[in-house]
Length: 323
Ligand code: RUB
Image (cartoon, rainbow, N blue to C red; front, top):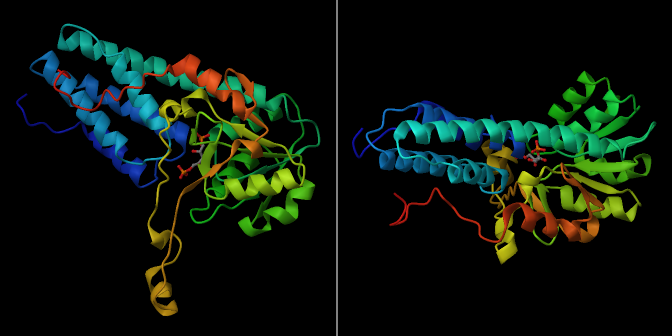
């Protein structure tokens, strides 16, 4: 292999699918990105260990550039690349394949574990309100159902992409009674619910929760009505860069998701904004459920330091000492 190279088709396809939201949701994005790095590593057509490392970093950059908000993506890439070691191309490739395997298994186990922990908060007869589609939140409900707890759900449709429809379908597969509502009806239905249960794309060191747009306002309403706000989030959602004051970038999506071009032209000259996520301050959150236990948001920083330390590298960036 010379200086120019093409990335493995799995990397290109995965990057495209993440950008297009065919692969979506923070945990699923992390899993797919790790798998794509594994496919790249298995393509052992490299001249030298340096060339192998260069291609792996390029693959990680391609994946990292897809969506900016879910920290599970850079956390996954960091995990896999930081474990890349060996003197030969074959040894390097083996180390990547091993770390990809470990990462994906840990991800599954973490979700199962947090599901069991979260299920402990759900009691027979409880009604849960959901927003967007979160596999971590679903794991809590699925574990509750498995242990025989009778729960029902009020599901917000979650404009503009209607991920609530995915949640509704999966809840029905679990036999959970579902009422689907438009987003604007949430406040009206909060008196009927026992928990607000949502996922997270990123959690900052101060316990702020970045999740699908609409979460912050919903959390304020829930607290106003005395409904506990429960965030289901594996530790891969913790954003270690926020320990040093970095803020989480909020993805701005295409305005046509909000309004098609013809209708927009018909209305006249207007601006259309489509931020995909918002930030819920820790004072509006009751508990963050992770695979390591439940945390009040203000104490999540302790877990973040323990798991990530302060020194957060970006091993996909080429530096003079990279090779
Ligand atoms: C998905 C979303 C989900 C979190 C958590 O947004 O906001 O609540 O990613 O999901 P999008 P999970 O559809 O824009 O990716 O618990 O599955 O990681």
